[in-house]
Amino acid sequence: MSDVRTIRLAFTLISRKAWAGGYNYQLNLFHALAKYCPSAITAVVFASEGHDARELALIRQVPAAEIVCSANFDRPALTSLLPTMFAQDRGAISTFRSHRIDAVWENARFFGWKTPYPTVAWIPDFQHRHLPHLFSSNARRRRELGFQLQVLSGRTIVLSSRSAERDCLSYYPRTKGRTAVVRFACEPSAELLKLDPVEVIQKYDLPRTYFYVPNQFWRHKNHWIVLDALASLAQHDVRPVVVASGGGDPHEPEYLEQILREAADRGLAQQFRYLGMIPLGDVYALLRASTALINPSRFEGWSTTVEEAKSFGVPMILSDIDVHREQAEQRARYFGTDDAAALAAHLRDFEHSAFVAREMNDQVGERVREFAESFVSTIKQVVRAHPH
Figure 1 (cartoon, rainbow, N blue to C red):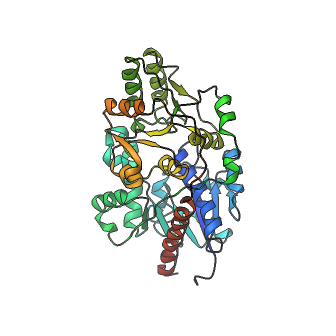
Figure 2: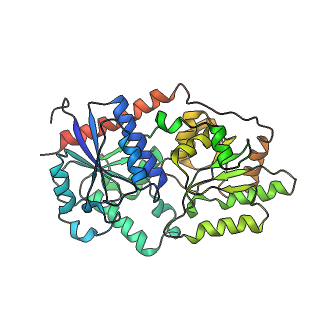
Figure 3: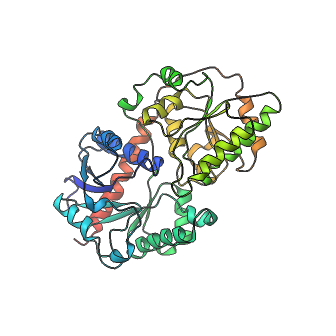
């Protein structure tokens, strides 16, 4: 295939309800490709017939992106691996063929050992290896099987950070020479930034100064340490407000209730303000006006929330894990994943901060251009190397 021809690249749409960071990654990627590499790749996005219409609406706003809703994409990710293990996902492949697909971007779904398409596998992280106790034995085995199939079938493996690449080469040495690091960068569309942060703050009845944790309520996101830090500060009559948004873990729905119940039992309900799963435009408005972003996570492959904070110049208070250091370098304050006292000290340092509603900074465009060009280069290399 000539580099002059536009590559029609198939994506399986990630549900925002299931994984907000993955949905945001795809949405920003599609916008970046349309803006900075418009003739290189057309994103053809495949979704189930019952996919959330609100999520599809945001994708439809991306110039040149195409959406295909098909029953062949109704099943959950990483299911029915056995029929495709040494053959191909016939339903998906047939749908790809009818929509003139040239290559496939594979995330959390294996399209088969004998897929006829150049296929790139995106592995966001290796959490099941780092934190195996957070997975059921069945979930861990399924995740590992999916990764092993992608590795053994010869896929090019795309990682979002050098940290994740080191993990990949350590756990799956066969991938040596077949990995590519494509660092995500975020430039939200104008449509998502049209809201006035002051009005959004009033909508949720929030104070003008607050910290923001827009992580989903999965156990590894480590919300407990935020409660511990708030409780510690309350003993000194220091009572900052931390706003949290995001959905619960469908595999452990009781975890969210445990966090909220603990906040209430410790007298922190007015300081730990949970908003639920809110519209993405509201998320960006609250982030722009926040005193600082907090990401207390024990593990990340590449943090979407950190990239979003960087795009607006929002101060960051981050857990001291390798990927956060790789992303934020000296632009953040860090605390150990179990060091509530250090987190409390950082919160106290911002005690007298003034309200600021930030705009995107001048460096965003160049970072996102590099992201898009790196992505395109990786896809083109895989397409050129494919025997068909």
